[in-house]
Image 1 (cartoon, rainbow, N blue to C red):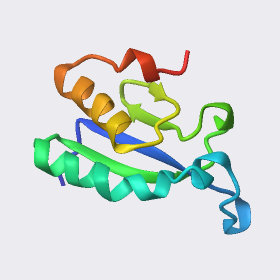
Image 2 (image 1 turned 90 degrees about the vertical axis):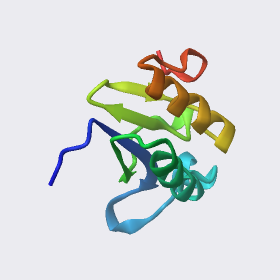
Image 3 (image 1 turned 135 degrees about the vertical axis):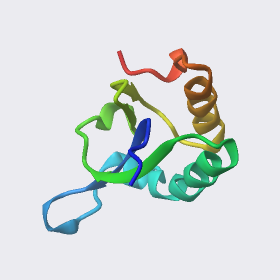
Image 4 (image 1 turned 180 degrees about the horizontal axis):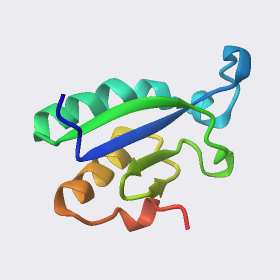
Length: 101
């Protein structure tokens, strides 16, 4: 197995017991997963996308984290925001307006 260059984590708000109660889930983060996966393939990015449990970033939800870059993005509520993040990833930069500081 080839290790991906980037790992994209999408907060799905799941908590112990499997309850999806958090902000990211309520704002539709789960619905972005197929779009992100499709864009990774279409763009030929060497990346993997994974949904996660709660990342404790509810004030900024939905939250996406990219490793190994340790980039935390917030308010990723739609495909346009995802495109900004992936465009920056392709260019080796960051989507500054979405970064959680």
